[in-house]
Amino acid sequence: MLPVGKAEVLRKGSYAALFALGTTVYPAMQAAEILSHDNIECTVINSRFIKPIDKDLIIEIAQTHTYILTIEENVLHGGFGSALCEVLAGMPSAAKIFHLGIPDEFIPHGSQNLLRERYHLDPPGIIATIKSLK
Image (cartoon, rainbow, N blue to C red; front, top):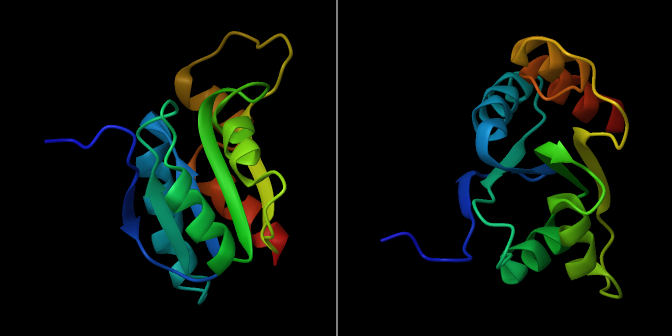
C-alpha cells in the first residue's frame, strides 16, 4: 500500500537532491546516473504528493545536501517548489534551493519533448542545471 503523503527516495547521493514529480522522475534518475560518471552524486526523490507534502523528508534532505532542485512539469508559481520552500521557511538550512518547471508566461505550442527540452525538464537540461551549481 502506498503511504499517503510520503515521498520515496530512489537514489542516494550527497551533493544535490532532486525532488521530482510525475513525468520528471525518470529524467531525474537518468540525469543522476549520468552525473555520477562525473562524481556528482545526487539523491533522487519521487515526491509523489504535493498535498500532503512529506515535511519530514524535506527537512532531513535540507540538512544533509548542499543543493535542492525541484523538478515539476507544472507552473512554478504556487507549485510543488513553492510548497517545499514553505516547509523550509524559517528553518535553519544551508541548502540552496532551485526550481525547474514551467514559468508563469504564455507557453508556445510544441511537442512534449520540445517543450521539456525548452524548459530543461529533460535529462540534458537537468544535468546542465546541476553542473551550473558546481
